[in-house]
Length: 487
Image (tube, rainbow, N blue to C red):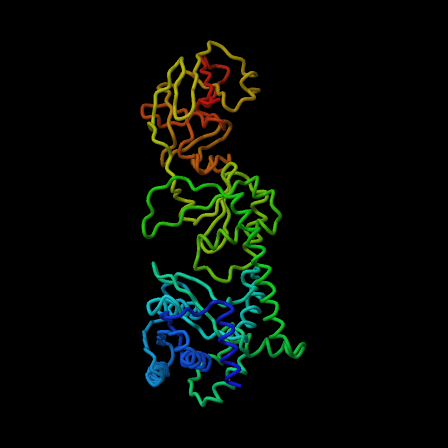
């Protein structure tokens, strides 16, 4: 039987291009049955592929028997003439510092260790692991990327500048056949006591849920594995659609200052009308793709937050922001839908154009400020009815008795009292309420007065201040028209 198994692993590796002649290959060896079988099989294939094997073991510091596991792996690797690298990691501390589960922290530490050993690592995931993974992703509401399960070969960058290829030579082999192989070769192995701990999600699947499902269909494992194969093929077809939609919908990134080591990744932006014209399934797929590009280490992205975000984006208005997941948010500004980190959303990487912060308003006359032209005219008389019925939000009538009219952009601490309001409010809150796009607020033109232009009289296009109200007793009125310079 073990010759048949060796041939099946060889054929699987050939079909999927897992092994290359003369390469340095780390083997993730925990000391458990699967990893010991994998290391033994690869020693049988070593001369055929001229492989330089390295048994890579990570001491997690979680169990009392961990010292014995590391010693066992070291001794066995030496007996099989395989180089062995044993590293230690405080997984519990890593989990606390990065707010990860013990499982996720252990996985992160392992792959970082593997990447230091070699650019490619073989891990011992088998067919039963594949069935468990597919079921786990199904229960978490994964998309097709998760439901296809683990791949024969995948690529990730767990350590900066150290890309890592992960191969799974045993992925088509059931656990029962691996156990038979170990018995036939009289191979020793270690048992991880935590594998029986059903407080871990995967262990509950393995020891409780799958045996229960087998009472409905004894072939549930094979069905899950076959479903993963089918979905993996269909996912490749979907990728072509997603790439086309991505290229047709995304916008070129704005100019930004050079990135710093801890700066958030720049936002990814879509043309809103094109995005909304896509089928809902493609809208969700684009958001999921954006999450993976902004959070390449994110795993098990659930369906629910993606679906909720896609529905929100269908009808939300400009200036609004919504949570996505993993510290990311959606933001609509004008005709653009952006996916960004909350830090990036609160501190945009694009800066407002260079401009004078304050400029005197010519009265009468025309003043250019930013990309607008402000034409001010003094009126000796004006009908209140005409002012109240003014249909143009970019034309305002202000009390001319005020002095030192100026144009500027907003300042920290600005307050504004809209016409008819009893008290004042933060200008920033007013801009949010009026749905002024977040990326335009820092360069939005304001008409002000006072020695330091401290009083906001008109938020152009939105509202006049109660302070500048024209009433029956107003002697002189200033009419200001604001027009885009390219209009």
